[in-house]
Image (cartoon, rainbow, N blue to C red; front, side, top):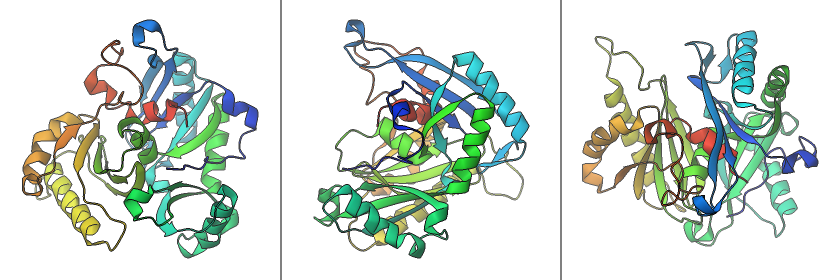
Length: 327
């Protein structure tokens, strides 16, 4: 799998070698995490260094839209002081990104990128000048030997505005990345050619992503989460979740070509483990295993080292953990 650098021209190249933390700006909370130095006692694998979180008041951020910029800058400043943040790789909510797949041509990175650029305006409602994109090449074992890219596109104005807000909190972004991609980096084994369905449970919404061959290939979001109150006459959160899983299953299985069947469902996010039995019951006819994610799968050796974040809490840090990893 090849992955292009996201916003490779911004900031200056020298920043790219700076040690950075992952910064997840979600509707629920701000999370930051930075890995420490490997040591003999950690099996020469990563350790968890600085980390912390700050709760976001309900309604301050809705689907990535910031309702009170001054308040968000205040919270970012609090987190920056709490965890000594400086250089950060920052999350982009899936609602602010467009995702599409396309066959590509070219034998070099520049040729492939140019080929994708030609196709942007026919796939997303943005002019090329107003868009920033990156792409992943799906493994040939998944595409049947066809060169195919999964492309993520974000409005340039959104990134530029995010940079301005971060600078007001004395934070220096080295790059940005959509939430599903950061999660996949943390929990999907390197060089995997399997297709998994990821359920990202949050307080007020839930992301449902399909990752095929390590590449995010589909995203969907429902506006209900683990903290959504049950109201009389409205479906419960669990029933909405099961219904959306069924819809995504039907969509994925009906696609023509380049599709492998879903081999596993992985739960991450706030109180995600509480929904394991519900999802197991919902997909029992599909014969697909349901597991709670191991956030440290690709970083820490848990046989040698115990992270200072509990297993349940680590599920909330999954985006920051993925962002903190090297590209």
